[in-house]
Image (cartoon, rainbow, N blue to C red; front, side, top):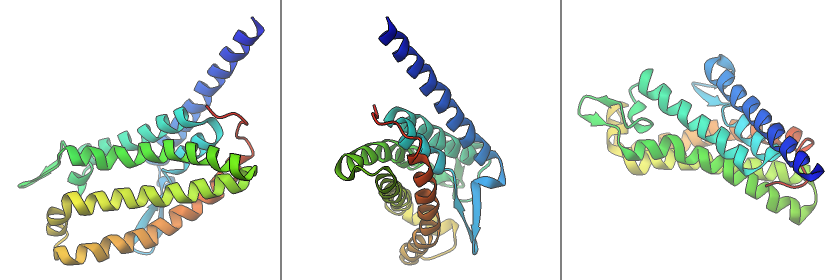
Length: 209
């Protein structure tokens, strides 16, 4: 009976904490706190609640907050679009350029992988090194970089021609543009992720689901 009550208490606590991280994701999305100016572009902080949830609560929470991240991106690019929103929303079009199922992947897939991958990699690294700070920092840094690569490479492979067209640039220069975004935005987002992950590691549970 006590074990059942303990499991129920842990389940309720996890749900409550997951809801807090989802609320934090919404707060960042709806305020300037979600974007950090880095030269002429903005780095995002929206990946941070995903990483915190994954490290502190495990894979289910990481997936839930990652799904929220992706859904917010999809909604923003559907209802408040820019000229390149077709890469993140299958419901948005610009002239003869249309979003498609690849847009849904670009908006959702990397964010789900970020949540799941961070939790699994943190658990693996903790088993190897028995050091939460080290495991959290490496997991957060690696998965943030992978997330950025997945998003930008999806744009390149699925939308190179129309993306270059709306940006008034040659398709051959798109690789350079994407590489610059990865180098500038990716570095800032990676450093933020490592810093936040180190703090989250102090509160992570011993047994991740």
